[in-house]
Length: 178
Ligand SMILES: Cc1cc2nc3c(=O)[nH]c(=O)nc-3n(C[C@H](O)[C@H](O)[C@H](O)COP(=O)(O)O)c2cc1C
Image (tube, rainbow, N blue to C red):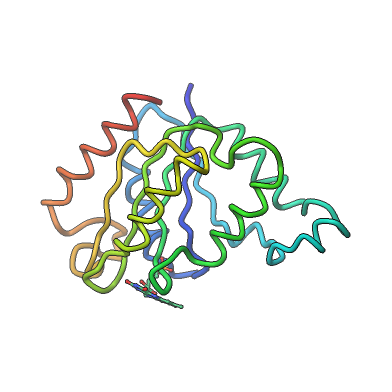
């Protein structure tokens, strides 16, 4: 059976992107999904000096094994100053030093959420350009702005039914190739 690895690119314990990932994951049936919190894999800020002195950190090895053991990804990334959050980019930098492409030519859904209306779209657009280079085959993407207006954090689900159609479409895209 295919397995998907799901995570957000956030360093926040209250991450709306992680909430989004959790809600999307629940809509997958017949596919095993592993949800991780990348905060559980702390890594030093990448440095060639650290790499030379200490080698690859154990948490990078753990992440690489998870990436290898799964057949695709569901990722939602916040936008920090128009760009990818440091914690997420740092993970990519470490994994890029371990041979092969970071996302191993596997399919993924790529999303972003923000409290403001922008939906993290600047970063999402940039990630859509970068992912093929990092070995991620994006089969569906969506950004959600004004997150609290369309999502109830208490129930952990969407309050906006219009979003369901968009979600169904991208979920179908991943289901088709996984
Ligand atoms: C350092 C920092 C920079 C941010 N920059 C942006 C930004 O460029 N665009 C944006 O839409 N939101 C920005 N935000 C607001 C984030 O969208 C918001 O904090 C969001 O909740 C982050 O997602 P998360 O809850 O999943 O961590 C920024 C937040 C922080 C802490």
